[in-house]
Image 1 (tube, rainbow, N blue to C red):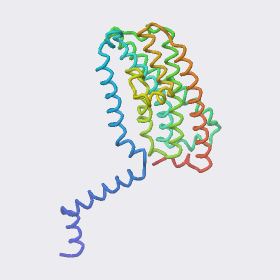
Image 2: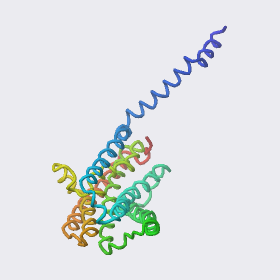
Image 3: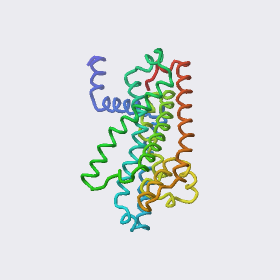
Image 4: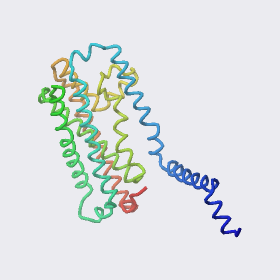
Length: 278
């Protein structure tokens, strides 16, 4: 047998197959090692799920009569949480679409200003959120005979505050994407869920350990959901929680805008707008 035939035989045999499989595994391990967002994602979802549903279980165990007071409170919590999630995702996905199409470089040399780009992302986020949420509210009416619109004007306050918070997170994620490229795109989906256990979507903030409560109350979302339960369970609108959510959102949105504009400027200087891949 010639040397070439022997090599071909080894490549086709079990040993050659094992080497090729090992080579591909190493390739993926190197990609994983070179991208911290991918490593974080592996442990992120199980950890968040355990924390979130563990807190829900603890609350239901000690407050079994809570649901009887307001049967629609969980449905309202789910829909308002989706406003926050879609508000953030609307900004991130619109930005990612430019990265996926390799269009950031073209936008960078166009007359479009970074502030105008950010404004367009926020407007698109509002449109996508309305398209996603409004039909769901009518489904809830049809299937569960519960209308989130029964909250009246407070619903508008909750919606706007959650949407603005979603914008702030979305702009920060866009700033990270400008720095780390598509290797960090998973942050568009997982970042916002990290604050779900602290936001009190399905349970009061008082359920959290004492040392975590100040951290939770530093989030606009926790004040929104506390205010939502006040409207639904007690029939009162809390100006205290509303004021805190607005004030915190001013800070959050300011940080988000500053992060995006700064990252965009650095990306232009370093030529990262033309290198938006992995």
